[in-house]
Length: 154
Image 1: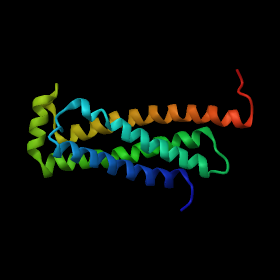
Image 2 (image 1 turned 90 degrees about the vertical axis):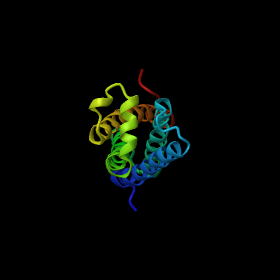
Image 3 (image 1 turned 90 degrees about the horizontal axis):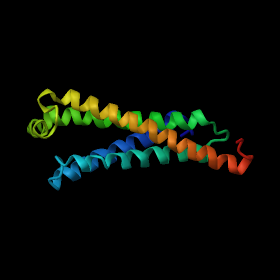
């Protein structure tokens, strides 16, 4: 498998989405699925997936550029969140519609909530988080790459 942006993003995006889905089921089994604060831990899975995707791209690439790493991170988070939000839409709409009703009770705009809006919100929140994580990681790698090749320009 080539070390391209797309291949890294697909591999780590799918792994990240499986981790997010697994965490969702773990919270559901433990009865913590309505605890909003715990859902914030999803960003740790997203950060890990983007980190490993960018690291893999940088470690295996012959010529690393900033936009390539940034694109890898953004595409990884996009794929992960597309799969995860699709799963949420199917889960809330088909598999367990009663969970959708319990979410409506806990959410501020609950009466307007439906599976599609929930999926869209998860996708948008996650994509923005993924963009920030990608940018932060590339700032780190840009600095660490410069320290080994040439002095940074002030």
